[in-house]
Length: 446
Image (cartoon, rainbow, N blue to C red; front, side, top):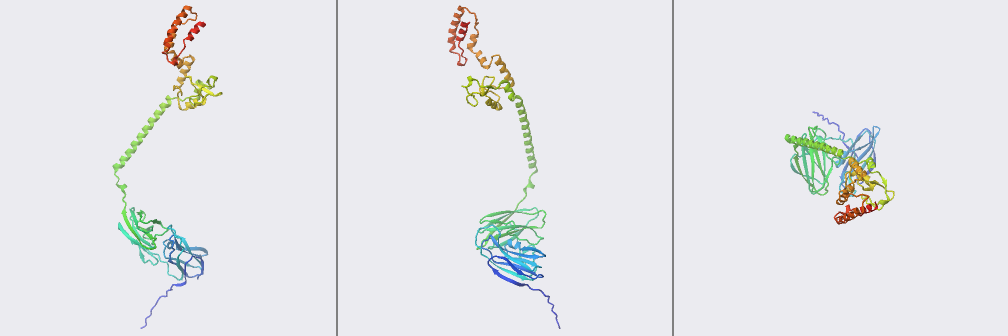
């Protein structure tokens, strides 16, 4: 019996280039077959000692007449040991392996690393992993964490991936309690219907210091019915593992439970406050209107009419302005108030901008008061003369019927009266002092 075995022909991978390096590569040129598919693979054997940096594979080629630069960005930022770049329909490529900064961390300026570079002819097609699987051949699976409190261990200089399932509009608070290692955290909001996308140094990455509790809010999106949040923790420690405690608690929306009576009370208080403010404003405006009517402003026209500016007289040179307390000087302009007080022109003008009374006697000035004082001044009945006229001594003197043509006997009688008045003169205040001898002298002259 003849048995035919039909074995399909499968092209096997062929490594056409393999080398190990400890330094960077710039423009390593290589010629390829235009019709074949090639895989350029960077395998990091020893990551740089300075953990701020990593190695990045960059391939420059010409496809369809245009120059292109191809990189495996996800593998670089996820700090994978392997970076793969596929090229086809090209004959010349330039390979670069660059020492690139990947994150901010402690400075350790040691430029030490080691890697191998491969070029493979007819490689297997690139595999994309469905959620929750990942890695180069999709052999590893993400860990689901839904327990409120759990403890995980992260290997040295490696990632640990897990995820939470978040329902629509739900919100949780995740507390990450770090131990004795420096740890980085990265988050990726993700829809499980897509291919798996892992956290990296380029995806919401933050450092968690030692013995520190990091807080993060996890919230489901209303538009995503199958949303998860993938979290990656990276241990920077090169000598030991990192112990991490996770605490997950749901955040309840308390706004929906706010009582309706509380809302009504708040609205009532706000409306009542607004009414009080409006009443106060109306009352204030009424008072301001009354004050503006009662108090007339002293304008320059009023001062020029009742207190005209004039040059200082010679008798006033030894006197001073009681506003600025400076002596009057020659050619100074002064103004005299109806109450017989003199001030510098500029001083009294500045005074009347803020006040409506006399700086000396505090007599209030209005249009009516100005008119009364001017009439009294014209009739020689100023406030000072009125005070003198009402004094005890002047009233006694006014009772005498002084006759210009008096006889000698009348003069003698007046002298006797004068002696009596002198005795009373001691009781008269100094400010009302009037010498009676002026009256006798005036009679003698007549």
